[in-house]
Image (cartoon, rainbow, N blue to C red):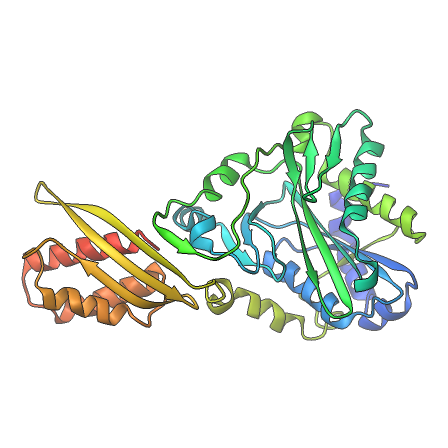
Length: 373
């Protein structure tokens, strides 16, 4: 049965208040189907962490259904500057999150469904999970041509990627999560998953570009609620459990003790950017000053999200070497981000010689350095 959104809104508090940590422990022997009432990516990723860290999955499996407001989610070992357009994301207020699992970068919004399959490590099986999703979709619409690939993607019509996969394997517990593009904003998706940054050298895990399509382009009569319910029903059938979706509030400490600390950690700059594998940017940029075109060379090395080495080469005599050296010296150790560089540049500007020309050149240089971030 499909639960209408209005009924979900009316009854979600009832469900949330009735569920307790003890309830999770005793209410289901073989499995649970959970659905988040939150569209906050950090809260939903924290649920994954909490289940992974706290639930005994030796004799039980869990399916977690969740959707997020517009967000780019990068893999555990990825470089956000290499994977996405941070400038557009800041402008459009699209969040950036780093998950605990590996794999590539994905775009989430409310037109994308996420499925997380939790099992013991012994029972971990990605392909079986994907086949389950395929059966659910074909049960809804037999005419849909959806198949799983050897790369653990789901393809529509044999050519268009509608789902990507990632996983985390712990000592005794494992989870596999996958996306399902239903009616995602493809303009946002294509614009934010394209890095404008040139000259990056990195050993970070790269994403593999693919042609994508929304499932609902094939059948506009479908809804996300129908798809989630179909997958939940197939999951219940396979694991011989009740087809009951339990709505959860990821911020409820009575259900998930300690979860808000997990959410806060996932939101920190140190986790999102600081966990980026060491990389460097060696590039040139052009500056226009008083109708003259000038070229500057920049070489920056970044470790743990902070600038470790900084070299800026400017045209001779354009700016006093001492000023450029001061910028390089102060950038070392700072976060590789425009807000910190803006604050740093403003502070240094106040102590540089009082000259309109020097101030203009300084501002122009700092603006261009920030375009690399």
